Image (cartoon, rainbow, N blue to C red; front, side):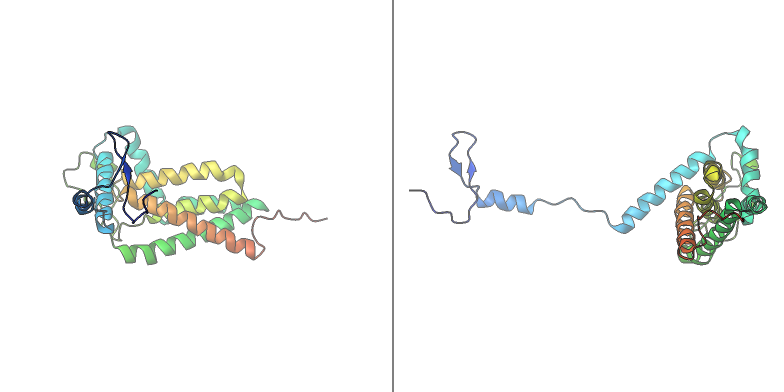
Length: 230
């Protein structure tokens, strides 16, 4: 007659295959064994900040004389979204989809810039990178802005413009996307942003463009092709 189960755990013996019950001492030892501690959110943020600092320093000590001048000029030209506004002005000269794409891009810049500067920087208040006086390549630097470092407003605006114009004017998707990436990297290369600031700016810019495109679609002013007269 089989023995009634009493709630104990029975296992097969490795020697003779007969069932055996683990001793209470062994079970307690297993329960009392220290469990690996889960990292807290503060520890995770500290590790991410350390990685961000390491990536920034890797860029600052890498000698790239052929890129320094071009990236410094690109970073300065992207101040106040001058490059994006110039492209938008050229697109606005054409009727139809290019003009609508320009309007969407400018609207996305406005949303991204306002969110980055009036919300993100005021909430996080991350200090700008420290550029030592004896930096190995001071010729690549641009003037250090006085605003907070997180997120990158230049990147947010450039990505927002590219992400909003692209769906309305697909032929511009790749060129504007590459330009936005170059602007974002130039802010690291010239010493005014950490890589994490640029990543956050890109995410913010993408969200701003999505919001503008969604609003334009609801209002019926989005990606519909224009009707030709006659």
